[in-house]
Length: 195
Length: 195
DNA sequence: CTATTCACTTGTCAATCGAACAGGCAATAA
DNA sequence: TTATTGCCTGTTCGATTGACAAGTGAATAG
Image 1 (cartoon, rainbow over the protein chains, first blue to last red):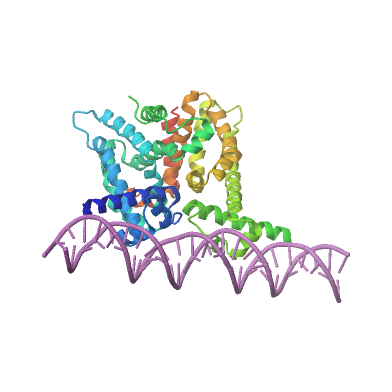
Image 2: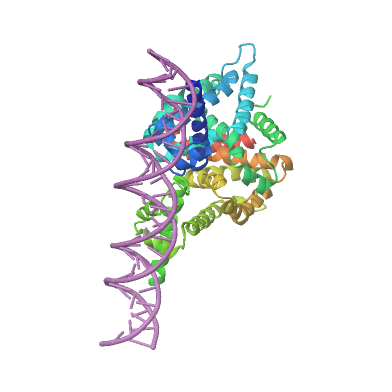
């Protein structure tokens, strides 16, 4: 009962940290704000995670655990699925994942400029394994195009969900709506891997 | 001579603010850091711009002045250019602009979650006029697809340049290289508006 | 030449930052 | 039951935050 409560509280803190950091950046959010979001005291963050930096790392771990879980099926598709359909499924799933977790791209953009130690760790620990799976499914497109395809794909999938308020105010289209998410998936799948 | 120096200093501060805010977010960067980047004292920021908020607004003004200047040709193409080629030129130029000014997308992503007052002002003052020009060139694609095309286009154009270190470390491809920029433009133009 | 304006620096303010610490209280162990 | 562990809160610290006021000195005006 103690251990369960401990884990529940830790996850509550990590989730709050992940969302807050994704929204405002590492230096843009205070540990007090994160604590308030998690409904705990600020001192508890120092207790469970020694420093704000370590909390960031725990948030990254949780983020990629969610991402890998969500993308597992399309990253390791059964051989019975045709390669073309594997690609289409991958793109579609990435759109749905980005819609459900816009914090992913936000978090990945945030680490870039701020701290090179955190950045290197994130790429080697979490991003590279994911990239390998991406290449495995997308691998028969020209190798020189792969990086372009990856970032085109990632940006095209997720940007609309990273700026939902802006998008709604600007175009009237609400990226939170299920119909819009499906339409974005359809649009992107047919654009990048037409049947 | 006084007035010229004044304007030069103000622009120096605004540029430093724009880049710093784009990198670390509004709350993620201090006025002292911005001042250091601009080689002026912190008190001078308060002197020229009353508050950090007002400085942010000046940075946004400068950002969109640069963006509109860079995109002017492709937003208002001569009628002699065929519609298909207009679209291709627009996409190509957006890639080159994103490569030269990755702070654009970063800045636009940063405003979203932080402050709704700044967000609304930014959309109505700067983004909507730009969106209208985009629609004018891209306008013959289905209206329901326009928002999807816009954010697909923006994300696909710019994300790779927003994470240059990550991209280089992950894929070995350096988005700062001219050859890579051209390849990304070729890739995206042919993807989104094939001849 | 003298007086004034004004871009700019320095010093200071309360508020807030991340981190550390002592203590309390409920769950566990004995 | 008693003793102990350990999750958690509240307080406090030196440092840093945005904003402000006083002071400096060179360019301008009369």
